[in-house]
Length: 137
Image (cartoon, rainbow, N blue to C red; front, side, top):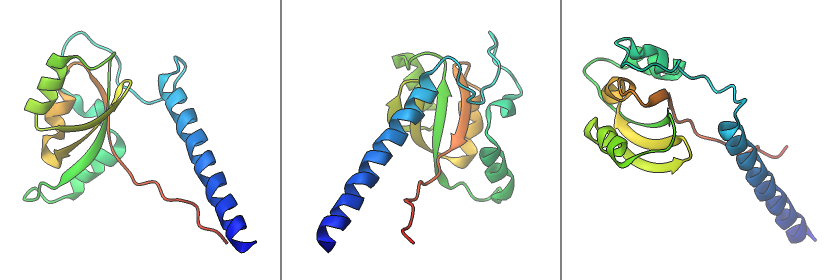
């Protein structure tokens, strides 16, 4: 009986996780998304900071200038990732780990993030954050 209840809890947790992921992906792809993005422009802005999430700006300000840790970032782009755009991201120092629609997951040295933000097709950059399961009472 005890084994069955733990197994049931595990299945329910997995199903709820999948539902949450589907809802999140739907939210990212919906036209009415409130995902914070920089305004579209035809020229590269010299003020890239509007593309950086608060957690990116905070890290850039808090980490000593002598340090350059690798961080995992989420980059939202306009449209789908083209081969030339992929090359530009990699040339700027990003190691692409995954792609979901307009969101790219990658690893980069913290101090290289501004180079990514300066790219015209990049709309928004944020640091990836861990997701923790709910603990049982």
